[in-house]
Length: 296
Image (cartoon, rainbow, N blue to C red; front, side, top):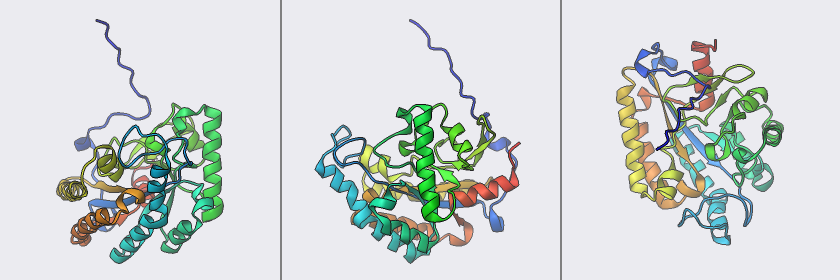
C-alpha cells in the first residue's frame, strides 16, 4: 500500500482563531453581515451550468430557461426585497451581463451596491485555462466592469470558485485588492502572490443557496434554518472576536417565490438584531480590515 505525501499550500500561513489580535468593526460592532448575490449568464446548450433536477444533466433548453428566470424575474424580486429591508448588497457580476441584461446593472448602480468581478460567464472556469488565456479573461472582464461602472472593481470571485496555480498572482497584477475564492476563515486574512499580498474576505459555501438547495437538494425551510442558526451562533461567537457572516445567493435559485419567502423570514430575524451588527459589503470589510492590519 503506497502513501501519498503531503503537498502543502504556500499562499497563506496557518493561524488559530484564538491567537489573533482582537479588533472591532465600525461603531464597535463585532459581527459584519454581507449579502453576496451571484448574477450570472450561461451559454445556450453548451459549456457549464447547473440543473434544477440532476447534477449530471446536459445543457438543455429546460435548464437554460430555468437559469434565465433569475435574470428575467428572480433578480427583480430580490432587488425589491432588499429595498424593503433597506439592505445593501454585493453582486458577483459576469461581465457579459452588460450585453445580455443591461437593466440589471442599471438597478445596481441606482442602489449604490458593490460590483465584484466574476469572470465573463459561468459557462466557463478559469481552472480550464492556461496562464495566458486566464490573464486575458481577467483583463476582459475587468475592463468591461470598469467601463460600465466607472471604476475598477476591488474584489473578485472566480466562476465556480476554482483557482489555477496562478489565479491569485494574475488578480493581484490586475489590480484586485481582495478575493472571495478561499472559504478558509470567518475573518479576512492576507494571502501571498508573486507581486505582493492580496486579502481573502470570508465567503460562505455553506450558507449558499446553490450548493444547499440545488446540489444537496435541501428544502427552502432547511436553508432558512441554516441562515438563522448560522447568524445566531456567529452573533454569540462574536462576543469573543469579530467575525464576518455572509449569505450567498443566486437569483435563479433564491428568486423562486417560495424560496424568497424563506429568505424574507431569515432577513426579518437578522434585522431584529440590526443594532448589534455591521451591515456591510465584502469591499467595505476588506477596506476596514486592511486599515487595521496592513499587509506586511
